[in-house]
Length: 307
Image 1: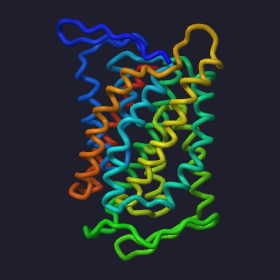
Image 2: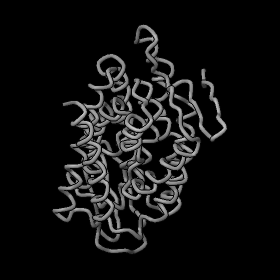
Image 3: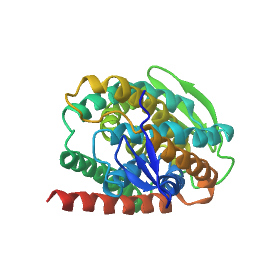
Image 4: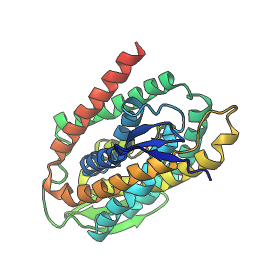
């Protein structure tokens, strides 16, 4: 496994050989920490905003940026997941349904990324389309008032969980929620394809659906979305590292930049923990509105670049 070399300059500049990125050593860490603190409050890893940062700010535009982004998830997410588990807010039935559906989709997304979307311009249009959809759903939720959870700020603990082939359910804040297991799996499969192609694991896409389509409180889906993203990102990184290189000809880089990804992940781990800690104190509507505005800026930039 080639971890690449780094060259450190006298002004704290680091050159990452795999990606060709040259930047201050602290910038990836700090950026990932800030992004993850903000996004993990809403159950998102932050990878959907970190990828545009790598492409537009750091100039990392080869297919290798996708697995590097997934590596960020692998390193960063466990700290946030631990917090949700410790506080009893991990809804395991939703988690397993999401994971079972997403895993095969992520594998399909890897093939699409390295065979159909290796060109940076085409990939940016794909990113803009995915982010545009996510941002639209978030704004829709904000204006319809669908993101205030239960409206109660109690124990935040989930109870009476069960998982079946046809239905899954749980109780939260005294209210019972029950949804279709196959429906969650099918949605997760489609999301897995998109997430594997983009390099986000799918949490940024599936979380809004769980709130709007299935009517689940935003405070209960955060942990499940993060756990699903974590497990599927592991699979994505492994496929990009060991299978994807056999699918491309020439010297097109498709393996992750391990050093850069680990540095992003370290900052993300701090941000994930802080976000999970702060979630109960920040109104869900404010979180989603801010995320939607950030997404709109990225989408507009990529569309203008493509025109």
